[in-house]
Image (cartoon, rainbow, N blue to C red; front, side):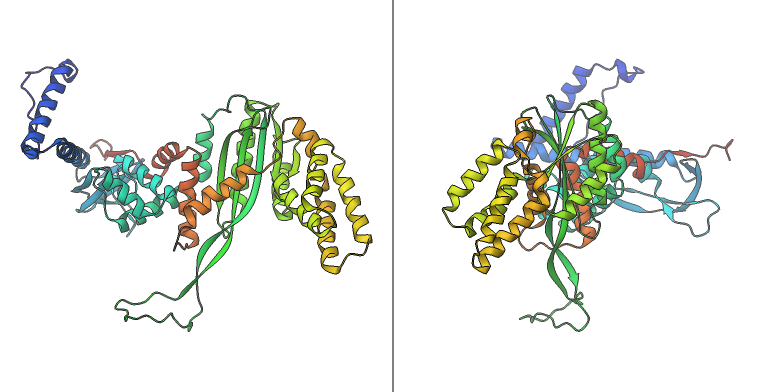
Length: 485
């Protein structure tokens, strides 16, 4: 282990120490240790050894600092956030950092006056340790949880010449941190919004809510036959499960300029069991924050024609005091896909018919009414049942959504007419992260992952981890003085 003996400078105060000299001595000691270990290796070997030495130094320093905190607490009574705790039992524990395990004493304390109450580790609260991880490492685990499987995080840390714990530990740690972030979602987002500013040039708030799917693990009834294995199981088998794709929710709050060009976007996701309520709550708070910064902003909702999604979004906007008026549009791409089905069923060249309709919808708001009358005329001509039904279905679509297909005037006014941010969020939230080969999820596991991914994609993860540590993992710890006793 590298040891640096400080030079004897008498009674000089720390701030009087010459910093350049200290850095020089540190550098010389570090270089001497690397030279000793490399023993004539090439530059690549030297780089690896230098990183190893740096890891050891950091790990030793962090361990010593945690030991100092434990020594400062002593074994007398402690006040933890003003409540009195008494020594319960000695113990040893391992904490995890980027540079390796930190093995330290971690005595437990129990609240005075509470029989058989839960024990508390004052070291965890005083140092702000999150799920047996140092603050920096906890944030890195949360980032990895939101970004990909634990095997990817483990491989990345090793490739960066860090010293991570095993994959199982990373997985458990990430899931616990994700669950904690999910429980504090509203408070974390409130803190983040205090410092967030609208992108320069913002003219329109662009909303969308959609459904996607995720592979969910579901327990099968007792007695369900298992898949036959070539080798017998040694351990006790878990209950049989099946994997089915279940609905999930994605919502976006985007910001566009005067031409309808996307500037930035906030993305939110939720599982089927958790429902869309939290997604809508976050979306409306983003709308409120934006409207407070610029009350002249316009609001437009652009999504597909699913009735349930429109009901949810419009109900949330009606309940939001900052949203007095908004525009509604069925996503242009989805609308054209519906019209294409009708054009295919009609006589004539499908592409030519669609080009005519597309051009007219871009020029006049009443074009959709003309298309509806065209459908009525075609139905009256007596097509074969299959073709007539296809046209009737699309006529119903226009009847239900014609008011949301006024593309000409809104497009000329600079409103976006597509739901690209929402469709992209379905991909970035679920397809990229949660639908990889062989993945399956429990509701709790998927919710924890979505919590990490939400803050990661919205660039709020550093704020999220600081807020979480302050609210749930940090406390004021001080020994009880004789006078207080």
